[in-house]
Structure formats: structure tokens, C-alpha cells
Length: 118
Image: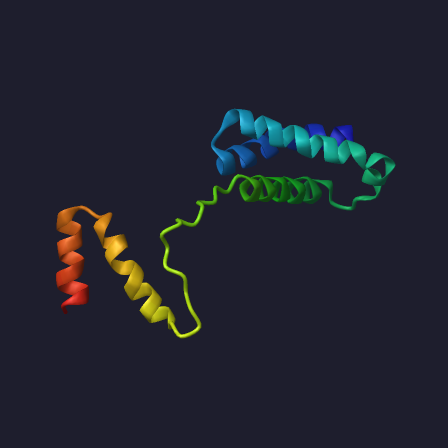
């Protein structure tokens, strides 16, 4: 395992840095990939393409980090509830004035004149 790791770690580091653009995060993921390989123990020797294995594990770890790092905004309390009789278009029409109010005046005017008034 050690030889495979030494042969791939610099290329893996570059690969990870291009995806993460953060040196500490790159090193964290690189260490995580190494630990996953080390935990394979003797089974690592059975892996037919160790380079491909390292890169697949690295992609998976990056994807997991992105999933965990998502920020979810809470639903505002004043959001109108969608009733059974309300169509999605009607619900959007109810939210539109509130959404437009958050825009700059010139942006709001442009949307109102072009998209709403035609």
C-alpha cells in the first residue's frame, strides 16, 4: 500500500486542490483517503488498480464534504401556505410581491414592466 500511496499522493493532492481550492481542506481529504487505504489492510493488495481506487475514494470524500457543507435556509414564517385549492401558479403569484420587494428599484421596475406587464 505504501508504494502505491507514495506514487499517487502528489497527483492526488493536485486533484483535490483543484476541487477544493483550500489547502487545509485538501490536506484533510488527502489524510482521509490515506486512512481509508490503511484500513483496508491486506485487502488493499487485492485491489487491481490502486491509482483508480485512490481517485475514486478521493472523489467520494469530496462529494461527502460538499453534501455535509450545504447550508439550508429556514422557511420564513410569513410564507403563504399552499392549500389544496391553490395551484402552484397561484402560490407563486402570492409570493411574487414579497420577492419583488427585495430587489433594487430599477431591477423591480424592469421585471414588472417586461415580464409582468408585457
